[in-house]
Image (cartoon, rainbow over all chains, first blue to last red; front, side, top):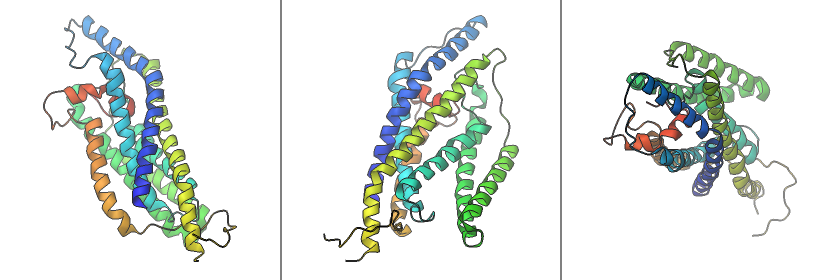
Amino acid sequence: MMRTLLVRGMLAGLAAGVLALVFTWLLGEPLVGSAIDFESAEAAAAGEAAEPELVSRGVQSTLGLATGVLLYAIAFGGLFALAFAIAYGRLGRISARSTSLLLALAGYLSAFVVPFLKYPANPPSVGNPDTIGERTGAYFLMVVLSIGLAVAATYLGRRLLPGLGAWNAALVAVLAFVVAVVVVQLLLPAINEVPKEFPAALLWNFRVVSLGTQLVMWATIGLLFGALVQRKLRTESQLTAQPV
Amino acid sequence: MSIASPSPIAIPIPVRIPLREVLPWAVFIGVLAVVLLYFVGAEQGATSLVSGHYVHEFVHDGRHLLGFPCH
């Protein structure tokens, strides 16, 4: 069973990666290009020499982008299958398809959207190279805390289920998650390194595309993985429910 | 295989996968995925296992668009 889930999880991840790649290549790459143009113009105005290109822009925006996005999506596809194996049958009486979609929503929110609210995606030329250590540490800490709090909230909801019923237990769990996230985000250091002259519209568009790329990926994983495992898990449940 | 009659219930009771069956996979795939995500998202940024900037420059656009801190 684990083998089946894992193979389908990584397949769903691969398909999700391809769709996210198309989305981000069409909508995001032009913005990356504009941001790099801004960076070069600023450097030229300051009289700095252009940096030598270790990897050409042509490779970065195609092969490099594809490698990054596909590996990222396959890794999350595998992790998703594991999370599904644990969640399935433990979130109440919902089908494999619904479990998958619910899990994808939780993954999108906790692994990306919540950390993004504190430390949003930035185009090239936003961000001081000297603070990369601090920013990387804060970002990954935010991601780990967000996922950890989502797992804890789910556990809390399950504990409250017998006393409060499904609806109210879920509401309390979500509320607890929101409160904990707000506290964590207030405690973590604020980072704002957007250059004064950087175009606001470009920054906004870049961040929206970043949110969209992840939405495409998570939605595809959730829907496709659910469709791929629904039949097999349903048959298994029926066989168990009706011993021959 | 002979099943007498298919169950009329729309949603059969989901059969849980025992945690002890999930655990070894979770550890192995979890470690593998974290290593993969590290190389896509953070190598040659704050920390560097491979010298130079090639990994960082190669996945540069993906890092920005996937929301990782970069530069």
